[in-house]
Length: 108
Image (cartoon, rainbow, N blue to C red; front, side):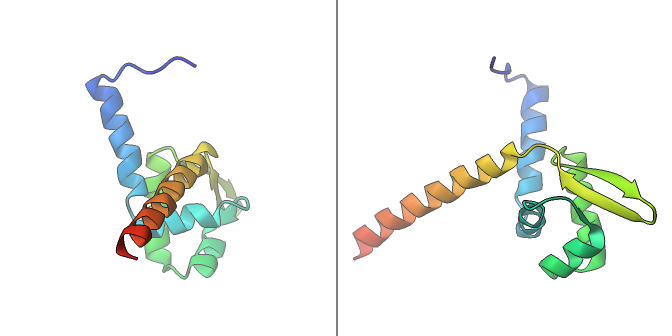
């Protein structure tokens, strides 16, 4: 796989994705989609995030290309656009665990 040239336009797209991931509520919504696609109603129930906020956050995730959506009658179903987002989350979590272990060892 070839590496992208880091033009200002590419960097702006990368920054947009990281901004979308920079909100705990959006991470909760992405985590809820790990098991498969869900309607907004199911996301509201599973995450305990209000309807207006789910709608707002899902729009941000959609614009960032992190989720896809499709209409099924009166409902909109959301799904992860690229499951590699979970790899990124796992890398961050592993780094936090490693850092936590080092801090615990230092602090005793």
